Picture 1 (cartoon, helix red, strand yellow):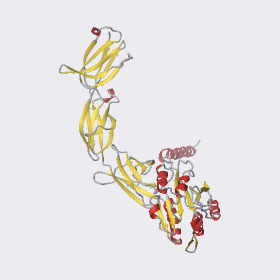
Picture 2 (cartoon, rainbow, N blue to C red):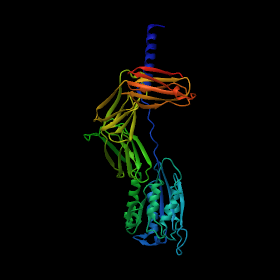
Picture 3 (cartoon, rainbow, N blue to C red):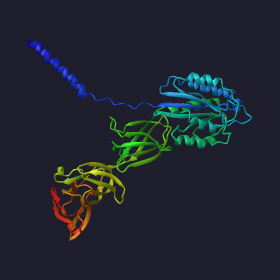
Picture 4 (cartoon, rainbow, N blue to C red):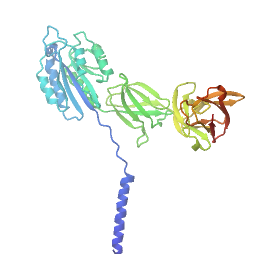
Length: 467
């Protein structure tokens, strides 16, 4: 092989390695995006006898059929959208009053606009107005789905006539997480007093207003709504980040979203896309957590939600070589409170809200450090003396305890395990101690064994209890 061929081969190999190094080191793994939810809209359509009434240019039923059909045409090619049609008051004539007159005429499914339009054309008004019953039956129309938004659009020209309570039924559907807050379009009259408690009410006093109401409802259902959560420090600057935030449905209390707060490439809080048809309670999982309730979004808009979460750092350290002491922990509480916020390991640094904290070190004897102050963006370090270790072993099972010996007094610290002859290792603060032990097979108290010993920082003491 001549020199030129060797050079070409070498450059080819180098190029191959560089390309593959770029694949390995230059490319970040593609993050998996959350699947877009399926929006399911159930139209609950009034076909009671009053829909034959004259209204502006035609009968109410014909106007409603035409305008709803036109709206359906605009929804044909929208992804992740399923539609269904439930009708009431169309099966049994009035009088007499039949308060169970409702039916799911077209169940949910993709690409069923044509089916709904065809069924709308063939509906003839006959009976009464059992709105509460129809809404209650609608709970069965939404088959189980893990990633769906369930929405009811009620179109009516009258109020409840069967003694039911549509407000109570609507609240039940929302609390159970079956559907979001319904939309109600009242045809011909102002029914706001009756339906404001049911859902988002739109008054359609004219054909034009009815068509506009339908479009506004669909716009609110389908348009994206964005949110920016600003986690503020003590100076009200949105610089806190990397904390999980849980969004709860304010009404049902169900978990809707979890996001670990992130700064985008511009150094500002990332933009989130949320369902605007819910009111939210947000819990920021700082230590301790911070909560903000009853957040209302404007559908199709952008909201900035400020939440004050000023944080600093608390570092727990052991003075000396920590390799001999493993898994030493401390309970962290807010100053003056007995509620445990965190159990933190020594050698670990953790974020906390600014403020004062009490620390209980889980060693023997117990150590309490009160009123430790965590400051904004500052690391507060708590250092304790290096403990020691005692290994207590006994050849036979028995009854024994460990005591702190100070000023000629014994203070109980620990009972050894009964039913096991295995050695026990205990982390102890420097000081003087005494072990008192009797074999379970000894039938006289005078066979009690006691041994005193001293613990020094970083040292291990072996105590053997031989009867």
